[in-house]
Image (cartoon, rainbow over all chains, first blue to last red; front, top):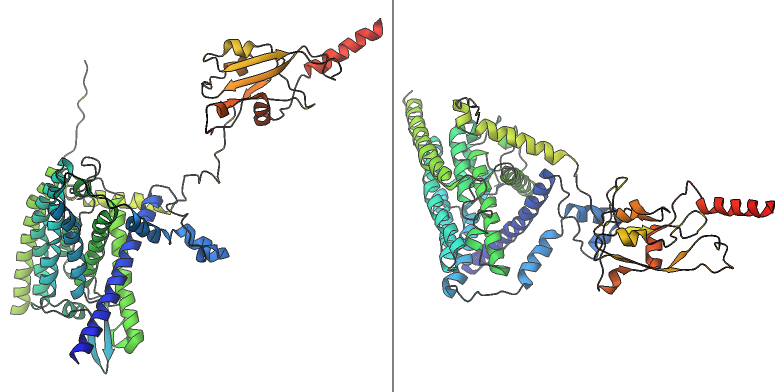
Length: 361
Length: 180
């Protein structure tokens, strides 16, 4: 029995990892395509697979859409010479991409992606249904910053170093607002930290999503999420115009690829967390929970709803990136400490009072 | 120096949160996203070359197929970087173009020297050399980029002629011969 459980668990994990990894690859494609369209370009549209690419209409369409590009990009990273610069601290230099990549992948274990209804009992589709789900995500995802700091420090070069320092300052500043903006949400749902229970509590005929009850919490969380995932307008650690490429300047080939995939995994998982907490998770708007089909169709439907919401949010991330310029470093710090943090505390106190009043009457 | 102080309105509360600006920015980028691309996919799609563009200098033929250049060497003299070399030659008597003064035996333009100024086109009394619409040029060796007469004629092609100067001269000569 134990062996079976372990095997099934492993299988689930492999499926989840491969789905998220390929999503990260295609998030890169979304980034490149949306960037191109916003800038009036067609974007990557040449890479073609030998057999599929030569199918008359569909092959051409897929090629024009750039659908084979992620495979080419991945292969390029894999087969490039993995150069190790002579001036780096070798142990930490090799360790840094792993430290940045692994937490990004680990956070997905507690993310409920759908639900499985059988005999009237709804069970979430999740790798590990932890009762401290969100604490786990906050704890593990903030480990990723060590990867960036290590990369900046071990590269033994000034631009990565500056990038690493900026990253650590920014991460510490925004982690506070990130966690504080979540507290009202958990108070609202009666103190549970289990992500699946929070999604279930957001059901309802009209969208019972948290974002309609707590728009300010959602806004603060979203802004802090942008900062935590190092996305523009907060991409201080990278800021390619003033720091060459920031913390990953000295990296190439597959080690750079790990940073790259880690960043996009972060975005996908971050979007997933936002969807789970504020956009009703796997719930389809205006559809009663009892109206959902049971068994496998219901599971597929709920996973699809979750995936679509997450994709829309990933698109929003990309859209913001190609709209806003980068903040200056002091502006980032000002916004974090003087803007978001007081706002998050005020938000927390406001909802604490409101919830206390609701419980009173 | 006169300076003008521009009055700046203090930001309203909504503007201080950056949010309205972000929304209007997002609107602009979404409009751009929905527009068709403005770029050309170069090797397959070529831009429209405007009239009067100064591309690679070429030698042209008239509609009768005669090389218009009479190797007067004016372009060779006017060429600022001295990219043009002309070896003048006689036209054999039995040729049907024997009435034309001369023809170039060899005509070379060193494309590594040419600065595309268009002086040769401007100075040519025979309208024989034109800077046309070829804008991309490359080669593997220096020798390859010294364009010979055949290459220049191939690039130039045939252009319509308004005057048919040498045909008229031939007609005049024949008419004069008839009078005698």
